Length: 124
Image (cartoon, rainbow, N blue to C red; front, side):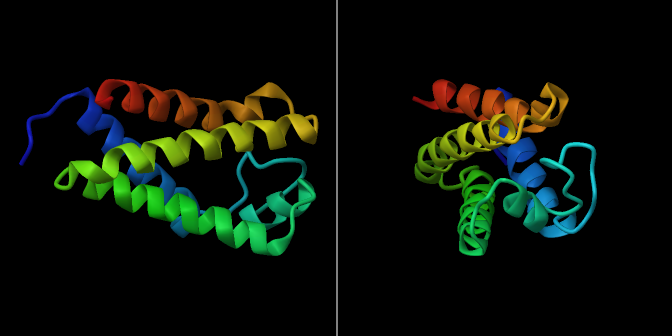
């Protein structure tokens, strides 16, 4: 097992967090869903995005999660996964702005952006 350090902690937190949101809680209501949505799929509708985009983003986020966790043992996966995640989180923040969400609803995306950006900067 690799030594415990900040990049490793960020990889695990980000990876497990993404898997939790997209695989376990996708159909659950939270206070952070965009607009008045009660599920991830409804959130994409509230943003005016097509259904196929929901599946594309979901696939990318799950792929990033797997890449971040697998990056513990396969470091070449880390930079691509963190880079894609930075772009996805910027998009998530833009969607919250688009629907005039209060800032608190953007908090998870902002934290994920900060963590993935930090991870990327530490591994460059």
